Length: 270
Length: 270
Image 1: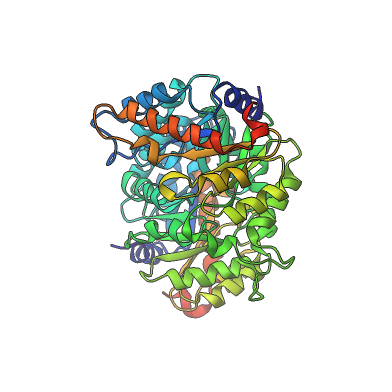
Image 2 (image 1 turned 90 degrees about the vertical axis):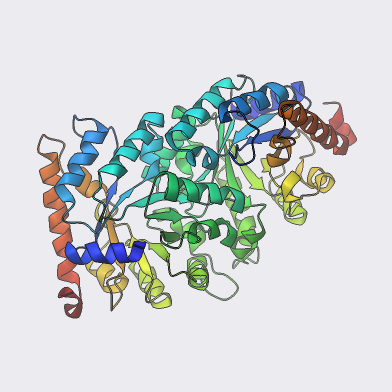
C-alpha cells in the first residue's frame, strides 16, 4: 500500500491528523532508557495518531546505540501507522540515491523529508520510490526561515513559492508533499492554494507556538484532509514523572480533539 | 587545534590541496569488506591528502553496520589529517543542535557540510563549535543546482551569492567555509571574489568533469591556499582488482601533482 493510502486509512480509523515527532532528548526524558521511553509513548498513543515522525538528528547524536534505538523504535510501531523519517536530506544524484536507499530500504520509512536547495536531481532518487511519501521543505517553521525562503525571485514570488511550484511540476507519481510551518499561517494558506491536493506536513504547533485554528483553516485541503499536524516536545515531555506515558496520551488526545474541532463541518464526519 | 590550522599544517606537510571523499559503494568496490577497503585507501594515500571526507549517505545506506564502519574509518585516519563529515544537514535550532552534537562530538568530525535553506538558526549550533569547520552549501556541483541556486533575488544577485554574503556576515568565529562546485567555474570565481579569504570546499573534479586548471585559478585564494579540492569516485574506483589501493594511490598522486602544477608560482613554494 502506498504512503498516502496508508496515511488516509489510519487517519480515518483513528479520526486523527496528529503526528507525534519521536525526538528523544536525553536531557528531557524521564528516568527510563530511550527505547523504553519511545515504546511507552507509542503504546500510549497509537490509537490517537495518523503517523509517527522520528527526527534522525536525535538518534545520530547518540551514535551507533542511537541508530539501533531508531531501528527498534521503527520495528515497534504498528504496521498500519506510517512512519516519516525526518531527515531533511539533499545531495548530488549519486549520493541522494544512497540516502533514499538508507531511508526507504534500510530503515523502512514510509516517507521522508528532503531539502530542495540542490534542485531536482537531489530529489529524483526519492520520488523514484513511487510508494513512499516525499516531503520537500518549503516554508519551514523556524524564525530564520525568512533568511532565504522569503527572498523574492524574478517572477515576483518568494523562493518558498517557487519551491512549491517546482514540487507540483515534479509530482508525476503523486508522492510529493510539502513541509509548511504552522508558525506562518499566511504562507501556509498560499501554499495550500498553489497545491490544493498535495499532502502538507505541518510542524510548528505546540512548543513553537503556531495557531491551531488558523493552521487547520488554511492547511487542511477541502476534500481529503491531506494534512499532517506534527507535535513533538509538547507531547513527549508532558511529564517527566512515572506517569509520563499517560500524560503524553492525555496531551495527544487533547490536541487530536482540538484539531478535529477546528475542521470544517463537512470533513468532520469523514 | 582548530580546523583551519590543522588543514593548513597537513596541506603544507603533504604539499596537497587534495581531499579524498570516502564514499564506499558496495556495487563498485573490490572484493574486500568496506572497512578493509576504506583502511586500504587511507593507508595508501595519507601522505598525499589535506583531508578525508566521508559522505554519511553511503554509511547510512548500510544501516547500523555502516555507521560502525564509519566510526572505525574515522578512528583509522591519522590524527593530523582533518576529517570532513559530508552530511549537508539543516534543521530547526533545537534539532540542528542535535546534528552538530552528532557530527562534532559523537562522531568527532573536524568539519561538516550544512545546508543553508532554513537560514541562520539552522547553522548557528554548528558555528558555536569554534574549533570546527562549517562548510555551507553555496553553488553545488550537480546539474540541478541551477533550479534554485541561480534564481535572482531582489538585490539583483542569484541566491547562491546571497548565501555567500550571509555566510560572510555570519562568520564571526572565522570557522565558516563554502561548498562551491568545480563544474561551474564562473560562479566559483565570483564566490572567491565575495569571500577572498574563506576556505572553499570544491567538489566536481573527476567523475563530475570539472576543469582543474580553471578551478585552481578561480578557487584558490591568493595568500593561504584556502581551498580543498575533493575527488571521490575517480580515486576510490581507479581499479577493482587486487592492487586497487596502489591504483588509488597512483591516481591520487597524479591529481595532487596536477593541482600543484596549476598553482600560481608564488604559492608553489609554500
